[in-house]
Amino acid sequence: MLDFWQAVAVSPLARNALLAGLLASIACGVVGTYVVTRRITYIAAGVAHCVLAGLGAAQYLNVVHGWRWLQPVHGALVAAIVAAGIIGGVALRAREREDTAIGAVWSVGMALGILFIYRTPGYNQDMMSYLFGNILLVTTRDLWTTLLLDVIIVGLAAAFHPQLQAVCFDEEFARLRNLRVDVYYMVLLMLTAVTVVVLSMVVGIVLVIALLTLPAAITGRFAGSLAGMMVGACLLCAAFTCLGLTLSYGPDLPAGPVIILVCGMAYLLVNAVGYLRARRR
Image 1: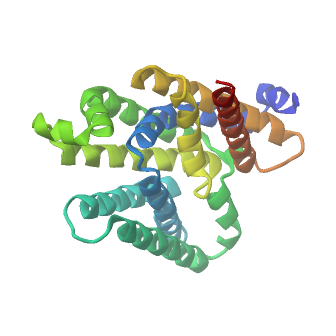
Image 2 (image 1 turned 180 degrees about the vertical axis):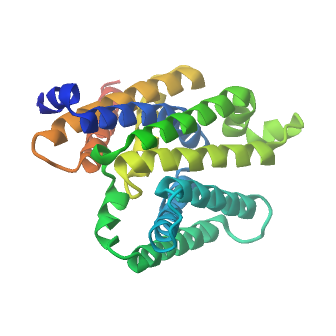
Image 3 (image 1 turned 120 degrees about the vertical axis):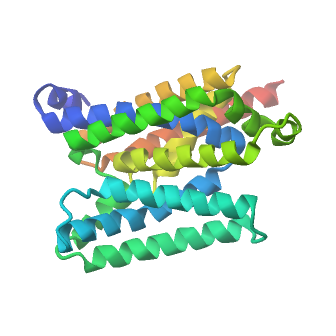
């Protein structure tokens, strides 16, 4: 149980993993609160799976065409923002059903990502690490990138918190107050896209939605305000990440799935306790 914390004291890889988890928790708590409150988890899922296209394209250009400055996280960020823009544009302007657009972006993004990965020499074996994460291989550059993305997320959330709160809780009332709902809805989607990129480095693309939504959903049962929900979600996400790293390190299990299992068990436990209390009343 203490193997991971002993490794933190001597191993840079373990320290980077811990720092990555803590930094990702900030983005997770802030944006996850908006996602859960606004009920756009399905949009976040579509964006998350489209990220694979950016990851694959960036690595293909890096390896095959020598674009050494281009890292997978850069491609992931571009793909996530493009996917969020397409889905948001369809939801706000087009007559096409929103779920159809999400399905199209989801499937096309995954397909493009797989094709790029397949065409990158010597790169196929890393597919699982992008799908399910490998937090123990996070580099110092990744940490600085995550910190920068955190600053952007927290800055935008702080600057537009009243507007984003209005869009999340009562969109029609916000429109009546002449708030530019469409603009702030797109800001929310862009924040979600950036957060998906941050979290995909911790738990991978497949599992990112659980880490984005479950801590916020748990905190939402107890918090009295949106700000309190954000703080609680950040703390819970950090706790789940640390516990998942602790449990996975000794048995040499993949950290991402273990972190999500911890989140899922906590979510089920909280709901079970709530259900039992409701029945007793």
